[in-house]
Length: 475
Image 1: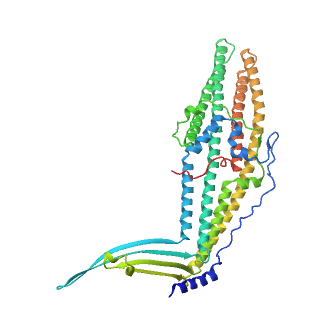
Image 2 (image 1 turned 30 degrees about the vertical axis):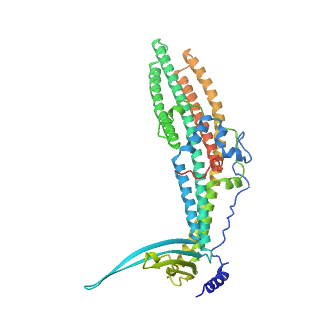
Image 3 (image 1 turned 90 degrees about the vertical axis):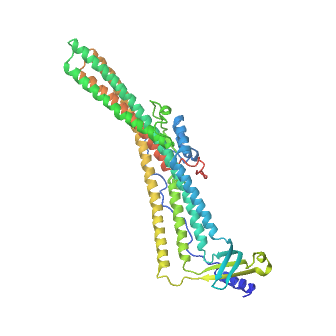
């Protein structure tokens, strides 16, 4: 067959099938979102309009240099983040492999053989030498290769969003553990103050008893109350150690590495009275887990097309340029050369329904990814609403506890003065002191909860990744 006829036949095939494409065209699903948040915030807490600059570095709203430093250390050293970077690099490499499948391939070969023929009378050896190039190119008649590239590209984009999601989670976890640590340290200081006060009341009870103006029951009560109060230190110190160890691991260090940096005492970061919550549409646009779910749906939609392409014929254009001779010296002469080029067509006509069922598998899997995307949107709405409510309620609770703690302290000081003067019973000063310490401990816990709920809100809004470089960083 002449070369011109080969190209003529190939042109006819391409003109007939060249515009064909398998699979459905991907359309981004529309999420049903409310116009605004359902949660009504308690005064004075308020939600402000979307502010991208605040949300992308939301941890700075606490104005805490140690927290800012910890977030930077987490981004630089966290091992889960390094794993996510490596996963992103691998997905990009897979995309490159898939793109290469749609391009021509060229291979070279060379051989030298010696063949021995022998019998009882004659020995003979025949040598042969060959070298050549083989080229092939699968013509993407029905778009199966294009769909494969489309799927791999969407997978790479999904991996990048997965990396963003890790960043969002890690910055939030770092901030939550830090705020909880400071709340635990503040509570420890009040437990220590509680012990100091109870020690003083115990001494007062003993003096009053020795002076004949007190009762032995008061002494014993003051003693066991003091000893029991000391047990609170153990649980609080354990919590502090756990928070410190967790922060060390989050930053990629061994437990105990941050103890000197985080100190033995601390103050709960001040929680701002407003948050840049925006509207649900802003959340949908920004959240990496939703973006990842959408890209995974796009990839699976393309894979349905890849499966459908197996229904149709595959056309491969191949060519060979070779050299062959029994004498190495004449291998590279013109008479040793040979060449061939031409198309080949393969079509799987009968496979007991394997292709049909694979298409069904891929399409049903696509439906699963669609449901996963819709579920991600609903879960994000729920997470944001809960965080808004938690932030609002805990902030308001902290304001009320601050007033209660202030009044409780005044009541305790008055009861203590009266007890020393013999104008009040021990049970009166004991009850007032317990309320004073309890309300202050609740206040520190509520401040911490308001802070962690604000962190949860910014996490739910998808903040924390836009200010951080997400290029390849794997080791």
